[in-house]
Length: 111
Length: 116
Image 1 (cartoon, rainbow over the protein chains, first blue to last red):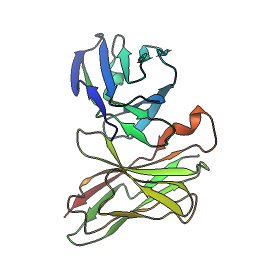
Image 2 (tube, chains in turn cyan, orange):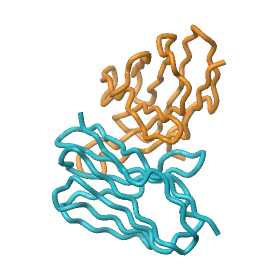
Image 3 (cartoon, rainbow over the protein chains, first blue to last red):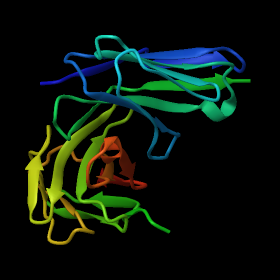
């Protein structure tokens, strides 16, 4: 079945440093979504990418969808303590309606 | 406020006991989902339902059962056959109709289940 892997599993950064998490799918995706889960909370939708090579920005967050639509990345510029949490990618394959969630990257930001 | 309500927030199960987790939504969404999250891990799909009176198994359905008698409600029963039920359970729903927005998942606050 479809698998979605994320690296790294954990990342500790100093406040102000940049952060990137990478997502790789075993199959071609029709779209990819990113979610953030704060400690003790539930996943919250951040963004959806649909087009090959698409790049979207939300303030300090930059999301990319690979040309082959099998990988994606999330880059945070100048991290802040409010960025702490686990970031998940989730891919949708073909015409299906089941998202496959990645394994997540847990981000910790130290002052 | 529109949203998804899960209850209870914390639940304890005794050996051999069935327990039911509640999930209610007032978003008028057609599709609803149940996920299991283990510490430090991603979300694994247990069951999902695209329409009332219909549901499909996800990747880890064994030991679980669901019903979808009403559009607003999608309860999950953790049966005694589930030997390792301790986890964080998340319910989600998605917008009905066409368009890219239909795949975006809205989550409830979750239920933490532990075994006594």
